[in-house]
Amino acid sequence: MSTMTTTPPRPHVPLSTRPPGSSYRRFKDRAATVALTGAMILAMIPLVLIIFEVTRRGIGVLNLDFITQTEPPPRREGGGYAAGFFGTLYIMALAVLMSIPFGIATAVYIVEYGPNRLTSTIRFFTDVMTGIPSIFVGLFVYGLLVIGWGGMGFGTFVGAVAIAVMMLPIVTRSAEEMLRLVPHEIRNASYGLGARKWQTIVHTVLPAAAPGLTTGSMLAIARGIGETAPLLLTAFGSGLIVTSLQGSPQGAVPMQLYRGATQPFEAGIDRAWGAALCLFLLVLAFTIVARWIGSKASTNG
Image (cartoon, rainbow, N blue to C red; front, top):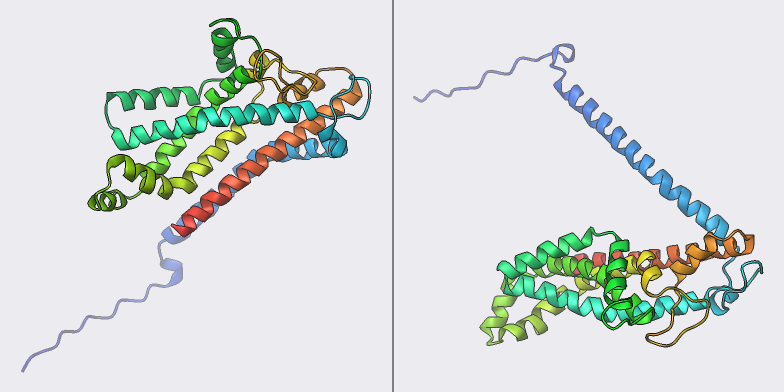
Protein backbone atom coordinates (compact mmCIF):
# COMPACT_ATOMS: atom_id res chain seq x y z
CA MET A 1 0.00 0.00 0.00
CA SER A 2 1.53 3.29 -1.17
CA THR A 3 1.60 6.28 1.04
CA MET A 4 0.78 9.76 -0.29
CA THR A 5 2.88 12.67 0.85
CA THR A 6 1.19 15.99 1.26
CA THR A 7 2.80 19.39 1.36
CA PRO A 8 2.17 21.11 4.66
CA PRO A 9 0.22 24.35 4.31
CA ARG A 10 2.23 27.57 4.23
CA PRO A 11 1.89 29.58 7.40
CA HIS A 12 -0.15 32.73 7.07
CA VAL A 13 1.90 35.90 7.46
CA PRO A 14 -0.06 38.95 8.60
CA LEU A 15 0.14 42.05 6.37
CA SER A 16 1.75 44.01 9.16
CA THR A 17 4.69 41.56 9.35
CA ARG A 18 5.31 41.14 5.56
CA PRO A 19 8.58 42.61 4.22
CA PRO A 20 8.09 46.08 2.73
CA GLY A 21 9.92 45.23 -0.52
CA SER A 22 6.87 45.40 -2.77
CA SER A 23 5.79 48.75 -1.33
CA TYR A 24 9.30 50.12 -1.76
CA ARG A 25 9.37 49.02 -5.40
CA ARG A 26 6.02 50.69 -6.05
CA PHE A 27 7.32 53.86 -4.44
CA LYS A 28 10.44 53.86 -6.65
CA ASP A 29 8.31 53.25 -9.72
CA ARG A 30 5.99 56.14 -8.93
CA ALA A 31 8.93 58.42 -8.08
CA ALA A 32 10.63 57.60 -11.40
CA THR A 33 7.37 58.22 -13.27
CA VAL A 34 6.91 61.61 -11.61
CA ALA A 35 10.54 62.58 -12.26
CA LEU A 36 10.40 61.60 -15.92
CA THR A 37 7.07 63.34 -16.43
CA GLY A 38 8.43 66.50 -14.83
CA ALA A 39 11.55 66.38 -17.02
CA MET A 40 9.37 65.98 -20.12
CA ILE A 41 7.23 68.96 -19.12
CA LEU A 42 10.32 71.10 -18.48
CA ALA A 43 11.74 70.15 -21.88
CA MET A 44 8.49 71.03 -23.63
CA ILE A 45 8.09 74.46 -22.01
CA PRO A 46 10.57 76.25 -24.34
CA LEU A 47 9.07 74.53 -27.39
CA VAL A 48 5.52 75.46 -26.43
CA LEU A 49 6.54 79.07 -25.73
CA ILE A 50 8.30 79.34 -29.10
CA ILE A 51 5.32 77.89 -30.97
CA PHE A 52 2.93 80.18 -29.12
CA GLU A 53 4.97 83.33 -29.73
CA VAL A 54 5.64 82.58 -33.41
CA THR A 55 1.98 81.79 -34.01
CA ARG A 56 0.78 84.87 -32.12
CA ARG A 57 3.09 87.26 -33.94
CA GLY A 58 2.92 85.68 -37.37
CA ILE A 59 -0.70 84.62 -37.84
CA GLY A 60 -1.89 88.15 -38.59
CA VAL A 61 0.58 88.51 -41.47
CA LEU A 62 -0.28 85.35 -43.37
CA ASN A 63 -2.62 85.87 -46.31
CA LEU A 64 -2.60 85.34 -50.05
CA ASP A 65 -0.59 88.52 -50.67
CA PHE A 66 2.16 87.27 -48.38
CA ILE A 67 2.70 84.30 -50.68
CA THR A 68 2.13 85.96 -54.06
CA GLN A 69 3.73 89.42 -53.65
CA THR A 70 7.36 90.43 -53.37
CA GLU A 71 8.83 92.22 -50.38
CA PRO A 72 8.29 96.01 -50.35
CA PRO A 73 10.68 98.52 -48.74
CA PRO A 74 11.19 97.83 -45.01
CA ARG A 75 9.07 100.78 -43.86
CA ARG A 76 6.04 99.85 -45.97
CA GLU A 77 3.41 97.46 -44.67
CA GLY A 78 1.93 94.61 -46.67
CA GLY A 79 3.67 92.70 -49.40
CA GLY A 80 5.14 89.28 -48.94
CA TYR A 81 7.95 86.82 -49.51
CA ALA A 82 7.02 85.46 -52.94
CA ALA A 83 10.68 85.64 -53.99
CA GLY A 84 11.70 83.70 -50.90
CA PHE A 85 9.12 80.98 -51.43
CA PHE A 86 10.06 80.61 -55.08
CA GLY A 87 13.78 80.55 -54.29
CA THR A 88 13.31 78.01 -51.50
CA LEU A 89 11.37 75.65 -53.76
CA TYR A 90 13.90 76.14 -56.57
CA ILE A 91 16.91 75.45 -54.34
CA MET A 92 15.26 72.51 -52.57
CA ALA A 93 14.24 70.88 -55.87
CA LEU A 94 17.86 70.94 -57.02
CA ALA A 95 19.13 69.82 -53.61
CA VAL A 96 16.73 66.86 -53.61
CA LEU A 97 17.97 65.78 -57.05
CA MET A 98 21.56 66.01 -55.82
CA SER A 99 21.29 64.42 -52.39
CA ILE A 100 18.58 61.75 -52.32
CA PRO A 101 19.72 59.57 -55.28
CA PHE A 102 23.36 59.77 -54.17
CA GLY A 103 22.46 59.13 -50.54
CA ILE A 104 20.38 56.05 -51.34
CA ALA A 105 23.04 54.77 -53.75
CA THR A 106 25.69 55.17 -51.05
CA ALA A 107 23.54 53.29 -48.56
CA VAL A 108 22.99 50.49 -51.09
CA TYR A 109 26.73 50.13 -51.56
CA ILE A 110 27.36 50.06 -47.80
CA VAL A 111 24.69 47.43 -47.10
CA GLU A 112 24.80 45.26 -50.22
CA TYR A 113 28.52 45.36 -51.09
CA GLY A 114 30.11 45.75 -47.66
CA PRO A 115 31.62 45.42 -45.23
CA ASN A 116 35.05 46.48 -46.42
CA ARG A 117 37.51 49.29 -45.76
CA LEU A 118 35.75 51.66 -48.14
CA THR A 119 32.33 51.19 -46.52
CA SER A 120 33.84 51.73 -43.07
CA THR A 121 35.43 54.96 -44.30
CA ILE A 122 32.19 56.12 -45.89
CA ARG A 123 30.24 55.42 -42.72
CA PHE A 124 32.81 57.27 -40.61
CA PHE A 125 32.74 60.40 -42.77
CA THR A 126 28.94 60.24 -42.95
CA ASP A 127 28.74 60.27 -39.16
CA VAL A 128 31.19 63.18 -39.03
CA MET A 129 29.22 65.16 -41.63
CA THR A 130 26.02 64.69 -39.65
CA GLY A 131 27.46 66.69 -36.75
CA ILE A 132 29.24 69.43 -38.75
CA PRO A 133 27.74 72.91 -38.15
CA SER A 134 25.96 74.26 -41.20
CA ILE A 135 28.16 77.38 -41.34
CA PHE A 136 31.18 75.18 -42.05
CA VAL A 137 29.36 73.65 -45.00
CA GLY A 138 28.56 77.14 -46.27
CA LEU A 139 32.21 78.17 -45.94
CA PHE A 140 33.35 75.03 -47.75
CA VAL A 141 31.02 75.56 -50.71
CA TYR A 142 31.83 79.28 -50.71
CA GLY A 143 35.55 78.62 -50.94
CA LEU A 144 35.16 75.79 -53.46
CA LEU A 145 32.55 77.13 -55.88
CA VAL A 146 31.78 80.80 -55.20
CA ILE A 147 35.31 82.22 -55.19
CA GLY A 148 37.22 79.12 -56.29
CA TRP A 149 37.03 76.60 -59.14
CA GLY A 150 36.43 79.23 -61.81
CA GLY A 151 34.60 81.68 -59.55
CA MET A 152 31.00 80.63 -60.17
CA GLY A 153 29.70 83.39 -57.92
CA PHE A 154 26.46 83.44 -55.96
CA GLY A 155 23.39 81.69 -57.27
CA THR A 156 20.80 78.96 -57.11
CA PHE A 157 23.10 76.10 -58.06
CA VAL A 158 25.77 76.68 -55.41
CA GLY A 159 23.05 77.24 -52.81
CA ALA A 160 21.52 73.91 -53.75
CA VAL A 161 24.94 72.26 -53.48
CA ALA A 162 25.31 73.57 -49.92
CA ILE A 163 21.86 72.31 -48.90
CA ALA A 164 22.50 68.96 -50.61
CA VAL A 165 25.69 68.52 -48.57
CA MET A 166 23.63 69.07 -45.42
CA MET A 167 20.98 66.57 -46.52
CA LEU A 168 23.29 63.85 -47.86
CA PRO A 169 24.43 62.29 -44.54
CA ILE A 170 20.87 62.22 -43.21
CA VAL A 171 19.62 60.42 -46.31
CA THR A 172 22.56 58.01 -46.29
CA ARG A 173 22.28 56.99 -42.64
CA SER A 174 18.51 56.62 -42.64
CA ALA A 175 18.58 54.67 -45.93
CA GLU A 176 21.29 52.39 -44.56
CA GLU A 177 19.19 51.51 -41.52
CA MET A 178 16.11 50.88 -43.64
CA LEU A 179 17.99 48.61 -46.07
CA ARG A 180 19.36 46.57 -43.17
CA LEU A 181 15.80 45.88 -42.02
CA VAL A 182 14.96 44.09 -45.28
CA PRO A 183 15.02 40.34 -44.43
CA HIS A 184 17.77 38.29 -46.06
CA GLU A 185 15.17 35.67 -46.96
CA ILE A 186 13.77 38.07 -49.57
CA ARG A 187 17.19 38.45 -51.15
CA ASN A 188 17.80 34.70 -51.10
CA ALA A 189 14.41 34.05 -52.72
CA SER A 190 15.30 36.47 -55.51
CA TYR A 191 18.67 34.80 -56.02
CA GLY A 192 16.95 31.42 -56.04
CA LEU A 193 14.76 32.56 -58.93
CA GLY A 194 17.86 33.37 -60.95
CA ALA A 195 18.00 37.15 -60.46
CA ARG A 196 21.35 38.88 -60.46
CA LYS A 197 22.51 41.07 -57.62
CA TRP A 198 21.59 44.36 -59.29
CA GLN A 199 18.19 42.96 -60.24
CA THR A 200 17.61 41.85 -56.65
CA ILE A 201 18.52 45.30 -55.38
CA VAL A 202 16.39 47.22 -57.87
CA HIS A 203 13.33 44.97 -57.99
CA THR A 204 13.28 43.45 -54.50
CA VAL A 205 15.33 45.29 -51.87
CA LEU A 206 14.54 48.90 -52.78
CA PRO A 207 10.75 48.35 -53.14
CA ALA A 208 10.70 46.56 -49.78
CA ALA A 209 12.52 49.47 -48.11
CA ALA A 210 10.67 52.20 -50.05
CA PRO A 211 8.50 53.48 -47.15
CA GLY A 212 11.51 53.83 -44.87
CA LEU A 213 13.55 55.48 -47.61
CA THR A 214 10.73 57.95 -48.16
CA THR A 215 10.58 58.73 -44.45
CA GLY A 216 14.31 59.45 -44.26
CA SER A 217 14.17 61.62 -47.37
CA MET A 218 11.28 63.66 -45.98
CA LEU A 219 13.15 64.28 -42.73
CA ALA A 220 16.22 65.38 -44.70
CA ILE A 221 14.07 67.81 -46.70
CA ALA A 222 12.61 69.18 -43.46
CA ARG A 223 16.18 69.76 -42.21
CA GLY A 224 17.35 71.42 -45.42
CA ILE A 225 14.37 73.71 -45.91
CA GLY A 226 15.13 75.66 -42.74
CA GLU A 227 18.88 76.09 -43.19
CA THR A 228 20.09 79.69 -43.32
CA ALA A 229 23.86 79.86 -42.81
CA PRO A 230 24.86 77.94 -45.97
CA LEU A 231 22.57 80.08 -48.13
CA LEU A 232 23.93 83.35 -46.74
CA LEU A 233 27.34 82.43 -48.19
CA THR A 234 26.17 80.80 -51.44
CA ALA A 235 22.78 82.05 -52.66
CA PHE A 236 23.31 85.47 -51.02
CA GLY A 237 19.60 86.41 -51.16
CA SER A 238 17.36 88.51 -53.37
CA GLY A 239 14.04 90.28 -52.99
CA LEU A 240 13.11 89.56 -56.61
CA ILE A 241 12.02 86.33 -58.28
CA VAL A 242 15.10 84.92 -60.00
CA THR A 243 14.80 82.05 -62.50
CA SER A 244 18.45 81.78 -63.57
CA LEU A 245 20.34 78.71 -62.44
CA GLN A 246 23.56 80.52 -61.65
CA GLY A 247 25.11 83.96 -61.84
CA SER A 248 22.47 85.95 -59.93
CA PRO A 249 21.76 85.99 -56.17
CA GLN A 250 18.75 83.86 -55.26
CA GLY A 251 16.26 84.50 -52.49
CA ALA A 252 15.03 82.08 -49.85
CA VAL A 253 12.61 82.34 -46.95
CA PRO A 254 15.24 81.78 -44.21
CA MET A 255 17.43 84.59 -45.56
CA GLN A 256 14.54 87.03 -45.91
CA LEU A 257 13.44 86.12 -42.40
CA TYR A 258 16.92 86.84 -41.04
CA ARG A 259 17.22 90.19 -42.78
CA GLY A 260 13.68 91.20 -41.91
CA ALA A 261 14.21 90.42 -38.23
CA THR A 262 17.41 92.49 -38.03
CA GLN A 263 15.95 95.71 -39.41
CA PRO A 264 14.51 98.42 -37.11
CA PHE A 265 11.17 98.84 -38.90
CA GLU A 266 8.03 97.27 -37.47
CA ALA A 267 6.56 96.35 -40.85
CA GLY A 268 9.65 94.36 -41.82
CA ILE A 269 9.77 92.65 -38.44
CA ASP A 270 6.11 91.60 -38.79
CA ARG A 271 6.86 90.04 -42.17
CA ALA A 272 9.76 88.17 -40.57
CA TRP A 273 7.37 86.71 -37.97
CA GLY A 274 5.09 85.59 -40.79
CA ALA A 275 8.02 83.94 -42.54
CA ALA A 276 9.00 82.18 -39.32
CA LEU A 277 5.49 80.78 -39.00
CA CYS A 278 5.57 79.62 -42.63
CA LEU A 279 8.88 77.82 -42.09
CA PHE A 280 7.54 76.20 -38.94
CA LEU A 281 4.45 74.96 -40.78
CA LEU A 282 6.53 73.62 -43.68
CA VAL A 283 8.89 71.71 -41.40
CA LEU A 284 5.95 70.45 -39.33
CA ALA A 285 4.15 69.24 -42.47
CA PHE A 286 7.18 67.33 -43.75
CA THR A 287 7.79 65.80 -40.33
CA ILE A 288 4.16 64.70 -39.93
CA VAL A 289 4.11 63.16 -43.41
CA ALA A 290 7.37 61.33 -42.69
CA ARG A 291 6.06 59.97 -39.40
CA TRP A 292 2.80 58.94 -41.05
CA ILE A 293 4.61 57.07 -43.80
CA GLY A 294 6.82 55.37 -41.21
CA SER A 295 3.85 54.32 -39.08
CA LYS A 296 1.98 52.97 -42.10
CA ALA A 297 5.05 51.00 -43.16
CA SER A 298 5.49 49.47 -39.71
CA THR A 299 1.79 48.57 -39.56
CA ASN A 300 1.83 46.95 -42.97
CA GLY A 301 5.05 45.17 -42.14
